[in-house]
Structure formats: structure tokens, C-alpha cells
Image (cartoon, rainbow, N blue to C red; front, side, top):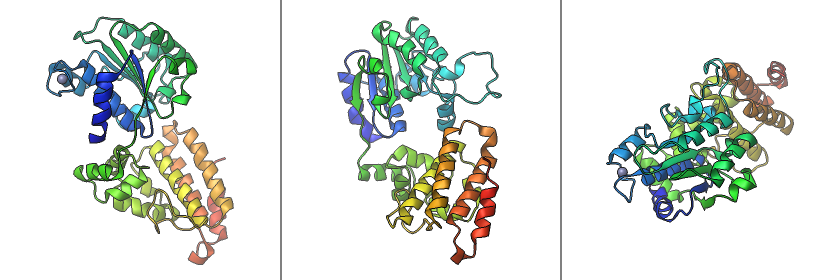
Length: 346
Ligand SMILES: [Zn+2]
């Protein structure tokens, strides 16, 4: 990611103190930058990361004993983040079977405590220890307070990188003990060139779909939503075709429906859509149904940690979309809309 090269070099050489908040839009970019920065500080052929030395090899393989990433299980699943030494939060033994309980949306206090104990052990390759928290605002107050003690009295050679979209979401006591670096999104032409080089057809459409974040745009294609599928998605959802979302994770599917709902509001207000191509979003029937759909999507987004409900929930949300977009002129009458609404869980 060429747009991260400059902040990487600046922070590698210029970071003061032991704790750094990386913030800005595009969380995946923040995680990439934090990971490369940690790799650079651990690199044995400075200025790194050289990608060649034994330390870099271990970092890239996700098995460096001096690099730990704390991430909620929901984010690990969404990013398909592997296990290994860096999967700190997943390693926490809490006596529960991971497959039976729902994945955690938080960086838990047990994981933070475990990381602090790890940080006080000796560095395996003598270049200190790197702890990355992503997203740092996934720590609850108890976990944040556990980290606070370490920020006040860090282990020797320890560096802490906190990735967060909005630093105001962190405790003031945490913020005041960290240096901050705002990370900007890449410029539009640079992002398009990078996506093209990655083999993305029609990168303009997917970049727009991802709100300008190139890695998120690439992730859409890799999740089975290339540009053509993105163009077709509003029409398929409006027609009640839930298979348009097959294979997507529940949080991603709900987010896409929320983007479609957002654009449907724009279209109904005679404004251009933000995420979907012009002309691809049908005009909804009326505001009442649209607002009801928006409320149902918001509720689903808040409870998206229940994976066993995923297919049923998505079917209900798409059925409600069908009712929202159903217009008398296209043959789908008021009655069809009502019956779809009636089948929704309350
Ligand atoms: Zn290296």
C-alpha cells in the first residue's frame, strides 16, 4: 500500500514515547500500518521493515513472539485473521467452548492482562515487544483501565499501538498518555491504480462502495461482490432475492443493506446515491416503509453477533426490502408488501 509508506517512515523514525494512537477513516488501513510499524521496529536490518531478516519473516508469518495483536473475535472472523501468537484475544482460556458461545465484540480485560504479563517477559529477539490494539475502542472501561497502568509504567522496550477511527472514543486518561498520528486515506487516483494492479475490474465502482477505502474495496471483490454483482445488488434485493447476499458474513451483509437503505433515502429525496451506481437503486414506495426498514437494519446491526440466526435474519430483512421497494406500478401491490412485513420477527 504505497500511500502508507510515508506515514510508516515518519512514525518509524519519529515516534516519541512508547504509546501511539493511529487514527483516521479506514480501519483496515490503520491495522496494516500498525502491523508494518511494529514489524519495522522489530526488523533486524534497520531501517525496516526489510521483509528479509529472520524477524521480518516471523512477523509476516504471524508467529513473532514479540508481536501481539489484540482484536475482538468478531473482527478476527471478519478479517479472517489467523490464530497464532498474535491472536491474543482468542487465546484467552475462559473455560467456555469457543464454538458454543457467541464471538466477543470486545477486547476483553483478560486479554489485556495476559498481554501485560507477556510484555513483562523478556523479548525473544532483543528488540522489545510490540502490542497492537485493533480497534482500540473495543476495550470496555475495565480493559481500558487495565491498559492504563501499563501506559503509565510500561515494560522496558515495550511499544503500544492503538488503532481507532475516532480517538475521542478512548478514555481521556488513555489519550493523554499517547502520542497521536492522523492517517489520511489515499488520494482517489492512487487508490484506483492500486486496485487495478490488484486485478479489480471497474475499481471506481467498488471504491465508491467501500466509502473510498481501497482495502475495503478489494475485500468486497474477495467476498464475492465484484463490480457487476455490486451493480445488480440493489435490483436483486428490491426483488426480494436474498441469495444476492449468499456467502457474505452477517455483519457485512447487514452493512451493505444499510448502505442500500441510505441510498434509497437519497433516491426518494431526488438526490444521487452515495454507494451504489446512479440508476441502480430503484425508488422506494414511501418513507414509512423505508424508515421501518432502516430501523430493522439498525436493530440487526446491533445484534449481529448471533450467527445462528444469520440466514433467517437476512431473509426477513430482504423481504422487508422487497416490501419497501414494492410499487403498484410494477405489479407488486400493497398487499404483497403487507404480507412480507407481517412475517418479520418482532
Ligand atoms: Zn527486517
